[in-house]
Structure formats: structure tokens, C-alpha cells
Amino acid sequence: MWDDVKDAWNRVMYAESAEEFNAGMNFLRSLVGEHSDLMNYIKETWLPFKHKFVKYAIDRYVHMSNTTTNRVEGAHAKLKVCFKDSKNHMCAAGAAIHRCTLLQHTRINAAFQASIFIREHTFKEKLYDNLRGVVSRYALMLIAKEKARIGKCGCTIRRTHDLPCSCRLGMMTTIPLTQVDQHWRRLTSISAPDESQPVLGLSIATELEVIAKMFKEANVSRRQAIKERLREIAYPDQNSMCPPPNKLPTRGRPNEPKASTRRIPCSWENVVAIAGSKQASNSSAPQDKARKTRSEKWKSIPSKQSAPKKRSKRIASNSAKLPP
Ligand SMILES: [Zn+2]
Image 1 (cartoon, protein in one colour):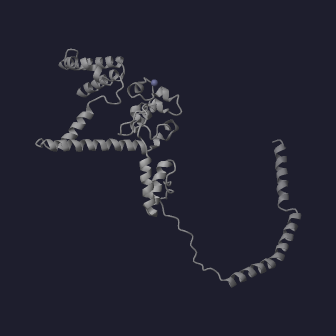
Image 2 (cartoon, rainbow, N blue to C red):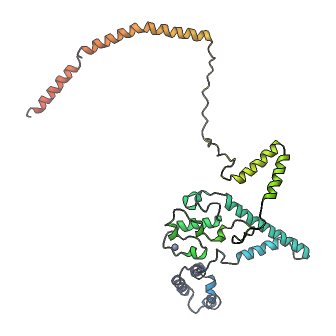
């Protein structure tokens, strides 16, 4: 009974349209009764705020998957773990908050790096050419999920996440970067400079001078290392990474190499072998001629066995023509 009520309530919460919501509410009423305590509680406590938790009502706004306060609650729980107990003084609490924030910052940066460098097999299609390494992996997963979706497109993901929906994906060969919101394109925790403002005082001349000085003073191996690092920045498409070696067979007994135990023949043995082969070929030449003449003779004589066969066939054909 309670499982059915729970399912009916989930149906109400995750309704994708007003019709589904009404149908879910009717089903719930039929289960628990119109005037039951549970129904009264739902009507008085939850339904006044349905625009804040029912899916079809939430999906009218851009929310980027932040539909609950779970993140805040999770951060609070982690902070309490860092505090350890409630008897610390202010400085210890401040240090704990700093540690917690630092940990969160590191985790976010790690997620950004994963989005930049990890190339998943699913996103190797041409469709994702403009997005690989530029857009968050979470956004790519949402797009892949939307692409695999079957049924009528309600354009929900376009409204809620500002990502291309399935009806638009069907018309694209490659997703343009402009179709993805700036929220999913930001893969750094450093505040992005305002592109419209002129860049003042942003120069790398000092750093290049220091690097040039360091290069002059360094030994050969250090110079090579500096050059490699600079090449990685200057030519990002030409790195020193090698393709993986061929996959070795791990099953079955490996084939043994063909090893011979015979020694290498001496030069005189080679001479004798060549002379012997020449002699053998000379001696075999008259025999071959004799064999050839014999075979030609046999070909010219009609075979005795073939004639009766022909006769028997003729007899058989004649007997077939005779009346019974
Ligand atoms: Zn659509």
C-alpha cells in the first residue's frame, strides 16, 4: 500500500506536464481517499508550493541541474566533519573552514582538468568536435543523453540547461560552440577577464627574459628540458606522446621461434653440395627424355578401356528407345 502511495507521489513530483500532474493527483486521491489525513496534509502543506518542486513547473526556468539544496547540505556536513567537535575556539574553526574550502576548490579544479584532458570514447564522434576539451564533461553527458532520447522533444534541456535539445541535434553534424551556454564552457577557477575592455599591462616580456637568462645559464640537459616545455606551449598539437604498442596476445601458448640446431656448413661442404647437385641434374637429363618419349607413345595409342564404355553407352541409349 505505502509503496503504491510513494510511487503515486513520485508520479506527481516528476510530472512533465500539467496533465500528468492532474492524473497523478487523481491516482493518489483514489489510493488514499479524498478526505483522508494524508490528503489534507498534502493539500495544506505541499500543494501551495508545487511551483517549487514539481518538475514541469521547475523546468520552465534555467536551473543548470540545481533544483534542490543538496549541495548546501552536503557542504554543511563536510564542514562539520572538519570541525570534529563543537568545543574549538574561533581560530581553529577558521582554520577548519579554510581547509574545507581549499579541499572543495581542489576538487573543482580537478573536475575542470578532467573535462579538458579526458577524451571519452562516447564523445569521439564528429558531433562533439567543437566541444571536446572546451566544455564540461557533465554538459557532454547531458547532450549524449538528450541525443539518445526517443520520443517527442519538449525542448526542456534548452530551457533548463541552455544546451541543444534532441530536435536541434537531429539537424546538426557538429554542434557549434555558441549553442552551449557560457556556464558549461568555463573550465577555470580564475576569474575570466572582460573581453570588451582593452588589455592593459598584460605582457610576457619579463617572463621571456627570465626564461632566456635561465636557458643561457643552464647545462645541456636542463636546456633540453626548458625547450621541451616551451615547445609544448608553442606547438600544442605536436607533443612527445607515442601511440600505445601493439596489443600482445595474452591467451594460449606463444609460438616458439623456428630454431635450427644444424651448424652452418663449411665452405668446402657448400662446394661439394653444388658440385653434387650439378652432377645429379646431368645424370637425370637422359632419363627425363626417355620418360617423355614413353608418355608421348602412350598418348598416341587409343586406350582400350575407353572403347567398351562408349559401346555400352550406345547400347543403353538404344535400349531406352525400344518399346517396352
Ligand atoms: Zn527541441
